[in-house]
Image 1 (tube, rainbow, N blue to C red):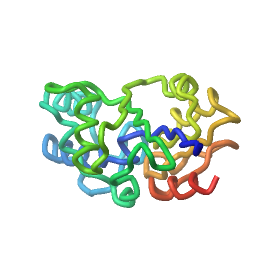
Image 2 (cartoon, helix red, strand yellow):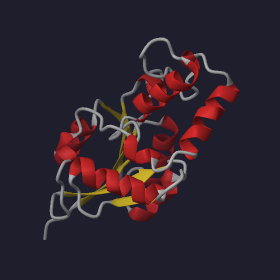
Image 3 (spheres, helix red, strand yellow):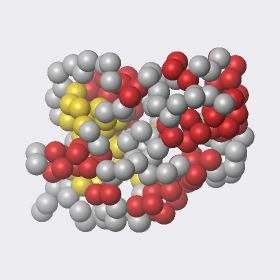
Length: 196
């Protein structure tokens, strides 16, 4: 019997281009940022937005019907395309997306994965406490672009699980501790996990 690895995969910043969609919405609403740079941190401080402007962007997202279906896939993610349950791994998509008008976050995310990656019946879980969830699911590996999520998962799963931080402009300054590996992309993560 072949054991399939359970992989926890964040969506935004790992599979989908949330940053590009958020930046476009900021430009549409406020004309900022001037350049198409990625965020320098989790507060988008290099975008020049006030707190009320950022709140207005999030309000627009929450008030948009099925906003999560509009995102584009990130590049270097094609190895996820068409994965099936009989593959060497079982992907479990864990996201902390905010609710919007329309379908639930889980439904929008599943439909998006079906459309862009041809994954039949993807498992999508919406949770902000990813470490506890990773432990309960007994994940073999996890990838996210938010350092705090990686630290949380590491705390709950070390030494059993492998934890990866996806490289991004907003986490470049983070010094990953022992137990958290850097991955340049989802494809890079999948290739490295397959070699374990």
